[in-house]
Image 1 (cartoon, rainbow, N blue to C red):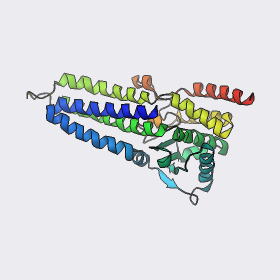
Image 2 (cartoon, rainbow, N blue to C red):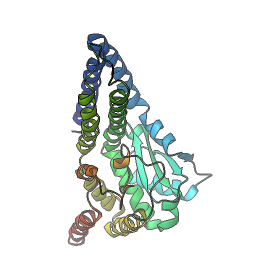
Image 3 (cartoon, rainbow, N blue to C red):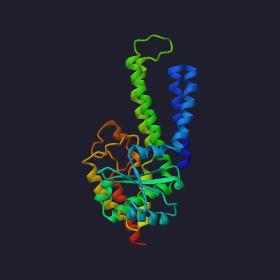
Image 4 (cartoon, rainbow, N blue to C red):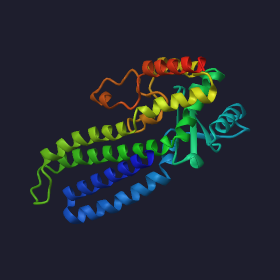
Length: 287
């Protein structure tokens, strides 16, 4: 299912780029856009994880620089039956975490310094188990590519706005109607939100359940989610963007998500996640 989603997203991006190329340059524009889309598809598959890590200034750590963290990830990876991923720390005080990469053999997990300071060891273990569940379920591939696609769509929308405001006085035959360009500059970000919704909210529930079963303690993740939700309501991760928000364990825009874009949120509410974990906990108790 995740492979099908990936193909659909890449196809949508390609068609969108070709369509916009046709608006700006006719057949020649479509061919140029097709070439650009092919390069972006290749890049998003093989390198977008590195781009996301660089965006958040993530620093790779090892058993010498962060022995405790590495030991936890190594133990959880063995339990999950996946290769040991690379481990990164994001030098930010806002607590959060994400996973990225195209498959379990090319995966990375990242946590912020704020998360390591805020949570106790059991809660940190639960958060990391959640991220490794994403890795095991190949969620990271679809999430990373979705981030790249959403960013590309936002970029196209900006071009539309720029062209509408600065090219509206031109009357060449092939110049797009400025009113249409303004409308598209509004519609395209909504399309980006819909694409991010394609990264189903169910994957967060699946990763929560995976974390509960890997650690054997659903209450650890419940406690971590409550702390993360409360803290993130007070501060905003500086480098956070709507295009990558779905990759984090909790929405980095918590408490600020009051716009129309909230209709396209990719995370279930923390209350829903805690209730689901409570059901899992009861199930595990009666086994």
